Image (cartoon, rainbow, N blue to C red; front, top):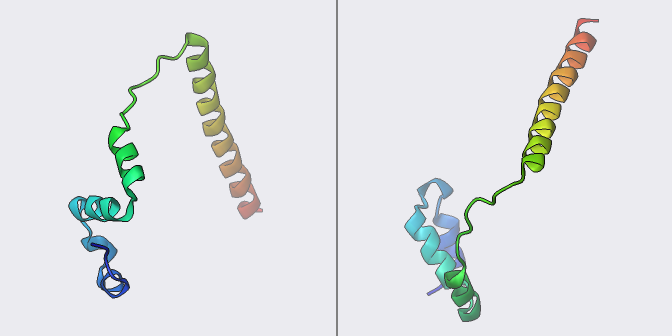
Length: 80
C-alpha cells in the first residue's frame, strides 16, 4: 500500500522512525529491486596495503594543514 500525497504532507520528518522508513522503502521498490536489495550483502573493511594507508594519512594531514592555513589567511584579512 502506497502512502498518499496527503498523508506524506501530514507526516513530519522528525516523527519518522526506522520501521516506518523501511516499510516505505519496501512499498516503493518494484519486486525486482526488492529482491536485489535483499540479496545485497554487507562488505567488510578492505585490507589496504601499507603504501595506501600512508597515502591516506598524508592526505588527511594535508587537509588539516590546509584548513589551518585558510583559517590563518581569513584571520589576517579580518585583522587588517
